[in-house]
Amino acid sequence: MTRDSIRRFAENQIAPRSEQHPKLLESAEGRPAHDHLVELFAQRKQSCRRPNLEITSDQEVSMLKGIKVLSFTHFLQGPAAVQMLADAGADVIKIEPPGGAFERGWSGLDAFKEGVSIFFLLGNRNQRSLSLDLRNEKAKKIVLHMVREADVLVENYRPGVLERLGFGYADMKAVNPRLVYCSCSGYGSSGPYLKRPGQDMLLQAMSGMTMLTGGADAPPTPVGSAIVDQHAAALAAFGVVSALLSRQLTGRGALVESNLLNAALDLQIEPFTYYLNKGRLWARTDPPLGSRFHPAPYGIYRTADGWIAISLTPISQMAAALDYPPLAAFNDLKDPMRRRDEIHHIIYERVQTRKTAEWIQIFDAHNIWHAPVNDYEEVETDPQVAHNKMIMTVEHPQAGEVRLLAHPVRYDGEAPPLRRLPPRQGEHTREILSELGYAADEIDALRDGGIAITEKAVP
Image 1 (cartoon, rainbow, N blue to C red):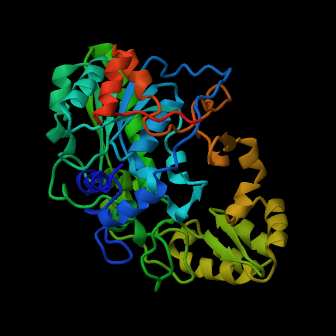
Image 2 (cartoon, rainbow, N blue to C red):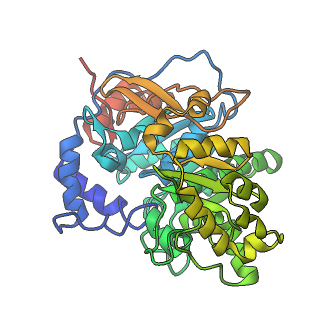
């Protein structure tokens, strides 16, 4: 992979779409980010040389068995959507450019194990990789061949990229009227914000989400996880499955669109709808309540040695649990709403008088809705998390032992199995081209011409 090809990848594909800004912001040194990516990819390009990554499983996955999905996705929103489909049994083919998917050379927390990006591993399991130079007409012919046989196409490139390549919805519908075409974007396929950067934290800010939590004088506070991306991904997967069901009845495919702005608003269906019908939410408080619309108690309360969460408990029960009779005077049914600040302050002060473990014992005895406030160290060892089998450990031939979150839904009591580790770039290029009818010498010619990228054999 040349420096020029990396630069072309950064300029043509990593732009205002999904969760990245117009040029992935500026690097720490003030250079355009595509220059920074040249170095990142050069450092990481050896990270995907490993043995075959298919895993044998006795567990049958039949929900989407027989559904073929073409995935033109990168970053998080798109890959998370197709991973849900892949987990459910769909045959997902990840179509990567010659430089490889962006996730291969970047990871939050700079989390790499033996050169393998954890960001790539968390969103690309149970799928195959086909690597093509889509600027070449022969590569386009390969894609069109696959589209004719595909059920679903999912993409989250920046607006206009696939259209310029000839793979926009109108063109693909003409090739295969039964195709379900899913576009994941920042703001939708049209409108005044079409060219704006669509990135999770930016959408939290502009959608009002950052103004929902925090103290009265605290700055707007984003959620410390890419919740908008993940919700938009789930909506995209839901849209795809819904369109597939509709196709069974109508025989026609559909255009499915999921965007970060709509997902961010959908996450706020409760407070935003209250605002639309009653006006401004209650002001943020100090100390902060857990929302701007719930009655007290509702929030994170400081104890003598830490924190505890308390939620939606009748005031009489709280007064008994706290051993504080004056709190029981707030006995009007509307008091938790109308006098929420007073009630919240009293509870906040009383909870500081005992340690967390003491309050847990007391609250259990008084049937108070409460929960510990955990950091990831506690979450990792939580008995219910273990019971739900949400953390899975896999042995990766290059990265070694890797721990990942499992598919979150259970089907007949079980999560879908891991059938394939996230693929190396072009790992299945030969296999897929063979399925399309290409002979070995034709595949070699495509490889030698830089049109199709195949993974080199690992000694």
